[in-house]
Length: 354
Image 1 (spheres, helix red, strand yellow):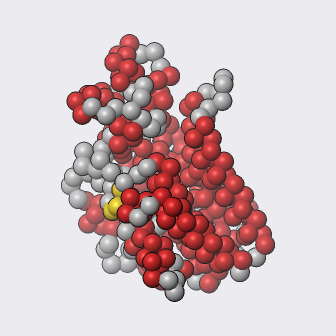
Image 2 (cartoon, rainbow, N blue to C red):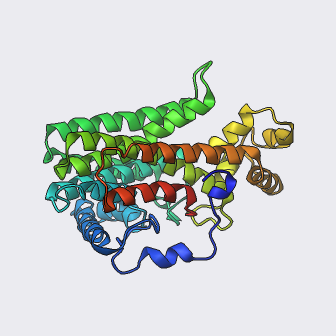
């Protein structure tokens, strides 16, 4: 699937109607989730993860507990726990260590969101007031640190190798954030820089989620490695699709208004392709997207031009390529429902609308 039409705008409600059908996991990652025994197993696993998350963010101090639970209770896709649990289906999916590892990855993700909102000066997260706007930057930063601490506490019980993997993952998360903040070095291709930042900031933790789920379920090492590589590609694809949804969505179902990145001057892949190109048809668009667009009329013009642009189509082709690369990593995964679900996820990331 390629071209700008690969991402569809929301509106018919067809996906929402299938997300919470009986036998499906309680997650909003879409209609690719399987029915039947596999779906029931994932649903049970997610219920265990959700219960453990509530325990992990609890505190004897009322305000700490409220702040720590703020983003968790606001909802979310639980994408990383779902991948951990799905990878674990190739082994002992009910292992207590699988649940703990999935919780570690989700707590780490949640902690980064608190910090991201401070850096981005975000007012909204998941359709609710961000922690920094509700309380303060200091509270948001410290709450993120609190969640990192709770994740580390759980991680200690999973052994030194898990601690090492998580530390290296966290190093990539931080390195990616620093590289994004600083921007590409002199002579570095901005597009390659952007994609490598996404691999660090998003792909690394998604990859670790699959690695942990498979490892603690006792899956064969060769399969663990392939699942890890698969998940990193899927993680980058998921972030790319998020960025494209910000452009093509008409109703802001992602929790922010369409074109928010344009308004804030955040150069996602389609904009980088516009800026790197010399297509005369995109000359006006290049002029508009050179920085933040705060004027409503100019913002509407830029968004309309970007939606119709060849650069958006090219960005969608890049998204397709990551999904294809992820699917190609499944060579050692045994045929069956789990492999089919992993492959279906590759399709989902290029067609989802929220």
